[in-house]
Each structure stands twice: as C-alpha cells, then as structure tokens.
Amino acid sequence: MKTIQAFWILPFIVFSLLSGVLGGWIRLGFVAIPLGAAAAHHGLLMVGCFLGALISLERAMVMKNKYGLVVPLSSALSMFFLLGGWPILGAILLLAASLGLVVLMYFQTLKVPKIYTYIIALGAAAWMLGNFAYIYSDFVPMATGWWMAFLLFTILGERMELNKFLPTPVWAKYVFYAGLAVFGLGLLLPFHQWGNTVLGAALLILSIWLVRFDMARFAAKKSGQFRYIGIGLLTGYFWLALNGWILGWMEGHSFYYDLYLHTFFLGFTFSMIWAHAPIIFPAVFRIKADVFHPVLWWGWGIFQISLAARVASSWAGWTSWRYFFGTVNGFSILALFLSMGLIVYFRRKVNASIITVDLAGKAKIIRSEEKMVSSK
Image (cartoon, rainbow, N blue to C red; front, side, top):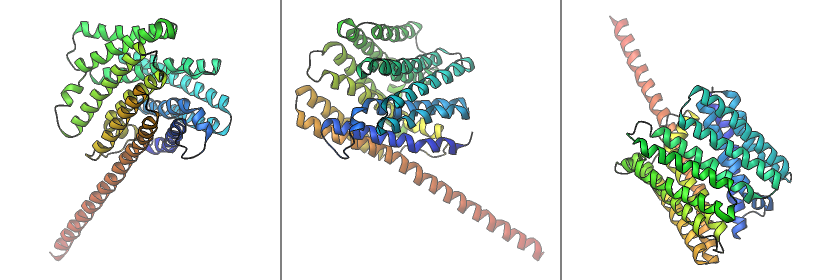
C-alpha cells in the first residue's frame, strides 16, 4: 500500500479536528467563527469524525489493506454532512464507518488471535453501538458511555499489546480483565442509579493497574523520547483516575457532565495521543522521521496546565476562568499537532538533503576514480 493513500485522508482528519475544536470554543462562548453546526455536533465531530477516523486509519494501515482506508475516509467525510445541515446523514455515515471498523477488527482477530486484539475489537463494537444509540435517540448522552468504551478498550488493548513482554503476574492480568468487565457492566446499568458509580469504580481500578503494571513507569525514568512517552502515559492515567472519581461520586455537581466528559476525552484520551504520537504517526504514515523534539514539551505542558485549570474552574464554578482556560486548551491542541507536522516536514527535508549531498559526494568520488583509470 502506498504511503500517499494515508496522506490523502489526513487533510479531512485535520479539518474535522479544527471543526470540533471550533465547536468546543463556541459552546464555551468564544465565537471565533460563527458556525452553529460545529457547536451542536461538537461530540460527534471530535469522537467520530476525528478520533474515529484516526483510530480507523491506524487499524487499516496495520492490516495493510487498501480497501480498509474507506473506513477512516467515511468517518472523516461525515463532518461535511454534520456541518452542512444534514446531521442524520452524517450520523449514518459514522455508523457505516464504525461497522467497517468492526469488520476490519474481525479480520485482524483472525490474523492475530490474541486477547489484546479482541479487546480492541470490543472497542470498535462499542463505537458502533454508540453511533446506533445516537441515531435511535437523537440524544448524545445516550451514546457517550459507548463512545468512552470505544476509546478506553482501544487504548488499553494497544497498551496491553505493547506490554506483552513485561513479566506481569497472572493475578494482575485477571484484575485487568475484571476492570474491563466491570466497565462493560456499568454500560448496561441505568446511568443515574448505579451505572455511573460502577463505571467510575472500573476506571479507578484500571488507572491504578496501569500505573503499577504498565511500562510507563520504566520509560519515565529514561531520557529523551522515552521520558516524554512515559510521563505522558502516567499523566493520562492520572486523568483516568480523576475521571473515575468524578464519574462515580460527583453527580450532584452543577458542572458534572462537563467535568467527566473533558477529564476523559481531553485529559485521558489526548494525553494518550500525545504519548503515542512519536511511535504511531511514523508507523501509520510510513515516514522515516522522528516525531519527537524537545519543543513538544512546551505544547504538552500548556495543554496539561490549561486543561487542569479549566477543570479546576469548572469544579469551583468560575465560569469566566473556565471560558479562558478552555479557549487556551483548544489552541494548545492545534499547536501540538502543528508542531508535530512541522517537525516531520523539516526532518524529512533535512534527511533528503543529507541523502542528496551523500549521493553528490559519491558521484564526485566515482568521477575522480574514472579520471584516474582513464589517465592510466
């Protein structure tokens, strides 16, 4: 499969991120561009059009099946229907994309019949169920839990795959599986009775497990890219634990919905994106360039600080500060992705120039050797 095929989808994924961030800004009160549809469908744009397309693209590239690229393309293109006034068509296209991801994961489980592949496949099924729940109810909260399961199962399945060579005790593996099972049980219970408490308890168990048994704690003690990844992962696990606490035991708070949504979808999910980016992006787009550069620490720090301040402002009920830090947080997301893109661009140019210089040098050597032979 040619690399360019993946790059064709990238502009649509980037545009879906831009429209999702724009919708979040409008919901906060910062009307950068007055696009009401972006605010109305903020959740669908971020979870379905952006994250769904990004994850589907990764899975399609792993499978090395060019037809699988239809899945992330469909997911990203659904934003045009959501923004253009045909939300039901956009939601149906997202449902079709999630069904396509289920099919992709079915074939991957046949190819790699491992427990972590099955967990990622369950995540794909959860995304499909969430999209169906949204179409059926036309109510985002009905789908939110399933969308959370989509991201949680996908990320933890990938973490399990990366940790497969660590000497994890058998009992610890069963605790991990139990945490996922409890989360699944919570999805089936009425949310405002026992469901949210069961979901929160499961996330607390899983976050503690990840801090203890994931390789992140070893990577954080190293330097350079390993330290960036390790600290990024541990920060994501902190957000997951905080999300579990808020989800299970802060239901009476006036900003409850805002708190538990953004500690998960921004705090946990985006922290995991930043941490995995130096590994995943080069593999997905088949680029021979290092995505990590120390400058990423600045963008990462602004993202984490602004998100923590936004969550604290919501917790305290400071609406003006929530607006300010939420706006800054949106800019930090865009800045980090832009920074990664620029790093890859300039490093590829440098690598190309090194190759050119190297080839030119070899050509000179060959010409000089030819002259020596002819003179003899």
